Image (cartoon, rainbow over all chains, first blue to last red; front, side):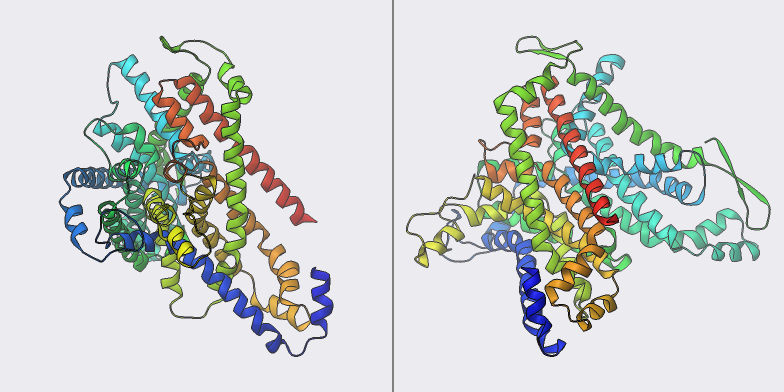
Length: 284
Length: 291
């Protein structure tokens, strides 16, 4: 097939002319993929405005009332609050342990550095469902051996989510440390600043984009996590993604669509803010 | 890795303790990942009795059962088949978009990239919900096909393997596009122009210049989407329905049936298979790359 293409186009006229149809085909193919990616988001948004409750096409009319229903739904409010609390706590704890770790990994040369680096990125590699199950059985063993029951507790949930946050932080903070000009620190010290002042006034502002981006990605990874949380939530304590999954296993209607759209908006805003600090396409 | 000595800026010796910097994070991740995985592996060698639940033992029974029981074997082959199909389709669909994003000069480029990235962080359940409104027997797709007179009966895609494949492709496509885009951006455009000026047709240029140079990126993107598809949970649960089984949902349902040893064995088969196929893929591409 390609051999034929060579002989055909070998006789073709000027390159500019020859490329035109190919260019259009390429752009059309790219557009198909682009629309494909956005299709589920477009349709869930559309459904959230349907006037009838049954999601049959075509809609009989349009309304905004499902957004009122969504905001007033106690189950989803509770789930949202839990997800936000867990996300914020896990992000803060993650930052406290991941920032020094990133500094150590980026600046120091020590035995086992590569292994530690890989270990800290491991929670991204182990499937969420396996990691959640594994943490669950560890908590079972802890409960049996040390009589310390963390099963289905808030603490256990936060612990699991710290693991989700750490790899994003390490990746993004180390990336911004790699691009940081160390002569700036030397200049500060030459001017008489001590090491703490240098870190506070020179290093920190320099790597702030990485810290902000790491925190944002960490929070979003925690906020949107489903698989790991399945094993760690307790009775009366559900995260938003699990609440959405359970509702969808039962039925789909404009209320859940409105809730989904609100979640999409929160995440899109977080991503647009993050994009001001680091280019999103560089880090995913 | 106790104390590390580094040459300080003013020539003075500055001693920093690597342990105090990386210690806490290392301990947390080791306790949260390595420890639990070891315990889980030990559980996978335990025995199970419906009345006594988990019984202490040291038996490969759960693994043998997985590879002999028709139910588990079907789950295994469906998972691998879905993962391979979605990966190939993601590659075919993703390459043109990645190329256009890598070469475009428009000032909306960043906005286009954000539009590709945001769906990644919108939960899989939400994206599955979007497909559910399309796929139902009275959904957009079925009704539109009937309105256009293409079909007379309602089309039922919901709760089929097709629905799951369509859903997983949408989930994984952004990863493929972003991986390919960053690799294609690193390929000098002059090489393409050189191929064209030597008389190559666009497809020949892609086959002989772009494809070999982008191969490491193609392998990376393919491996990433394959792993994600193998581990998919929300999409098969919501679009496949209760009868459709992939490995990740089976782990959770075995867990809920209290058969922890079996669930643990499925978990390790899932990770082992993914690892083996990933290694095979990277070895294969590295050999191709050398030729």
